[in-house]
Amino acid sequence: MATEATSPAPFNVVVVGQQGRLAYEALLFVASLRTMSPNFKGRVLIAEPQDGPLWTKDPSIRNQPVRDALADLGAEIIPFESKHFGDTYPFGNKIEMLKALPKGEPFVFFDSDTLITGDLAAVPFDFDRPSASLRREGTWPQPQLYGPGYTGLWKSLYDKFGLDFESSLDTSEPDEYWRRYLYFNAGFFYYRCPHEFGAKFLEYALAIRDTPPVELCAQSFDPWLDQIALPLVIHALGGGRDTLPKGLLDGAVSCHYRLLPLLYARESDHTVAVLEHVTAPNKIKKVLKTYDPIKRMIYQGRGTKARALFDRDNLPRKEQAIRNRLKSNGYWMR
Image (cartoon, rainbow, N blue to C red; front, top):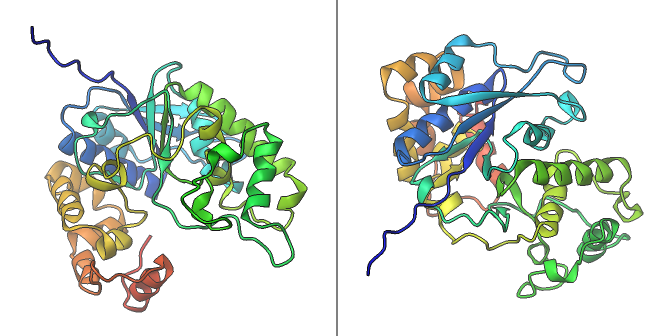
């Protein structure tokens, strides 16, 4: 006898939103999610840092039209306190906000500079086996001439936290090549409980920042601290590189575009079409066009002109080269 397929368990989606660019990016994110993933049944949460001693300016979203537009799209603003990072390391928001999310409920975090370009509800997340974005470059560590190599640097961290180093390695990659070692972009990550994930993330990040192994004495932790701690957290919680089918997140279903000029320069025609479709309705357009980079890149056509500078089938290998070409032609905005 045939049985009905069970729907995937609901999960929450969260991005960080704060005054300025991130608030507008959060609105773009939610608009794309609602348009491209109408079957998504979970909560959409905007984690908002609150004013406090670690911020020189109030980071909360004080733009009422943006708050109203987010509410109209069914997003909920969830406040959280910054107790460890704030202005000195704003990437720490994605660590500290986890404690404010509903305990015991599966979540997917996305950086605010992400578009949903397909059906997020159909992605087969295994929330017991966390993972994160593999769309990254070998930004950390940077082995020094007379210091330890990749193996020595990474192993010092696994040893510090009592983790098995060997099982984290991708042995299909050569020794001392950065891809052999577990490393993610923190543009998305997920797990079955934000409190459990967040407690370990905070523990590891603070320990690396405050009492790093001696092997790391020549390494920089800013802005890489979250991406140094993240693979250790994922490994400790039983996750890894390939717990998701390839081609969905950072593929058909989501795009971590970073900044609008980079989106127009290098992303797919589909991604650009999604961006321009979800920003077209007058109600959201009225809010978004009050932010100058969005007004110029999307509504005044500068993005289309910037896109014409690049061949998507033959892009420069390094992102910096893309940025430099955009800057030299007057299309760089952030």
